[in-house]
Image (cartoon, rainbow, N blue to C red; front, side, top):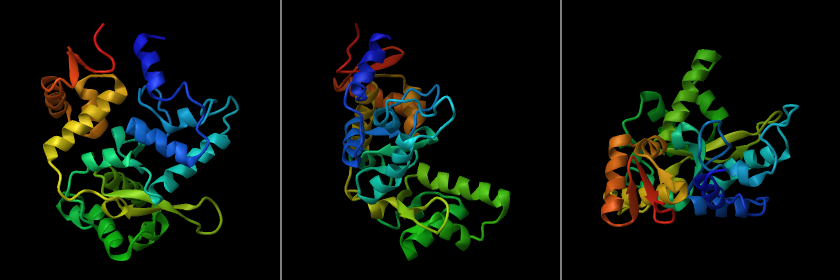
Length: 264
């Protein structure tokens, strides 16, 4: 294990007791700021499952396991309690955001109807307007409202939900038992589920989010930050350079380092 890998393991709670309760799960997300729900091969980011289990995600027999089942339930309950945002955001993958980081990443005014300025696809606007008008809705109810039938329509519907997540328009918000099978996730507008400050300096918010990312990753390249938050490499590099200018980070070309992990 390299020095960076060891430092990240400590930063990402690998040396702490296994997380078994939802309040500890919320504390983990608040501490690291962002986390994947489950680890992804080849993607070096903190994940909730990694701190909630001491076993591989799948056993040699391919079993899902009780730890994975518990984490799967937390993804819907954490947002419902206002403890963490959940959706497909970090690198477009199922992930969680601390409310404090969400406030800095949220790109609009913080009003329930601010998605009207988000440049969404027609289908995404339709879903968001249903939520605005009718309140939280299960994905089953949304499928019915949009008359989603067949594989092609289902694939398009899933792309629409991913678009809404990536734009931080919606979040999961509990589940609804439709009777038989797995409970159906409920969606809600992010701005209504979480208190997004109406008056924020976009530049200051982006700088705080950049520092949060670097403090969690310890070492990062611009494209890693850009891919994580959907900013692009150029915007990410500019934000990282501002941190260096303000002596809140170290430049170690082509990488940047947190103050907690200075160049050797």
